[in-house]
Image 1 (cartoon, rainbow, N blue to C red):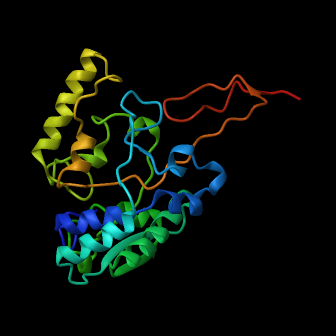
Image 2: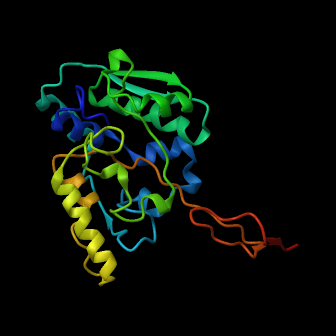
Length: 246
């Protein structure tokens, strides 16, 4: 989400947009029901990658998120400003998210300008801080591997550095960065992170007034039962040393 220009410079509009998002709808379109985790079927979302020390399971939305989104959008004073959503069609793993999200946003009451493009254009254009009418944007989607979002220190998409080195969208909040520093100190101390994690950058961003990003998908990685010798890499398995049994 781009914080620099309307309508997402309004915190109530941001909240309404994020409440309208539905992970299961996105995953149904992206990977199909067979690969959706039990957590997502129950409406539970991980704040970090599955298996990470701080991956506590919590419901970020209670009840009907769409109904709440419609109510909040009506209260926000939203004036019908179109939301420019970049939709790359040349990357299979990124094709479904903006299409499904656009429909959910329309259902909530937003006017959406879904702009078909390619991923290289998204990568170039997302760096622009100009208004959408001048080649800028309001929303885009991307993918992260678990290593990129495994803890609040490395998860740059929920940072608060603004235009001073922040992630695209340029959310700014000193409290979030202070929370990240606290998390880093706790991680370095290696003190009972699973039992009592500190108030993190991600948690602060989702429960306060910032709301810079929200996960909309997270398919499980499935293994093959007849493969042996599979080696884990830094983010994904490496494809050597494997052996397939008959």
